[in-house]
Figure (cartoon, rainbow, N blue to C red):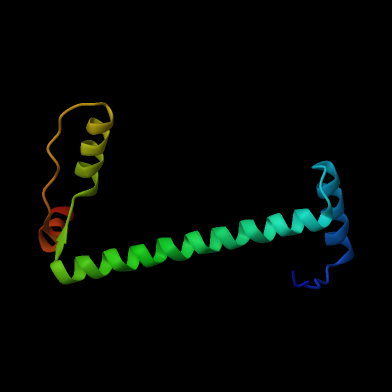
Length: 100
């Protein structure tokens, strides 16, 4: 496994050593875990943004949206085991006109 050298300020190194010791792990293990956590978080954020951009592209190309509060009510009813009618998509222009 390749190694990586990280230069830390003395205060950061002291904080790292203190936290690692309080968790019963080495400072190396603590840093590896922190890096893995940061990578996972960044990957999840990137996937979220990519999904949002795909959704935006779909709205732009189709011009259809679903009313947020109506969809929320639908989901709440479904999670309670109630029958509910899924809101129908509407033209974005209609949604914007209703908001005025």
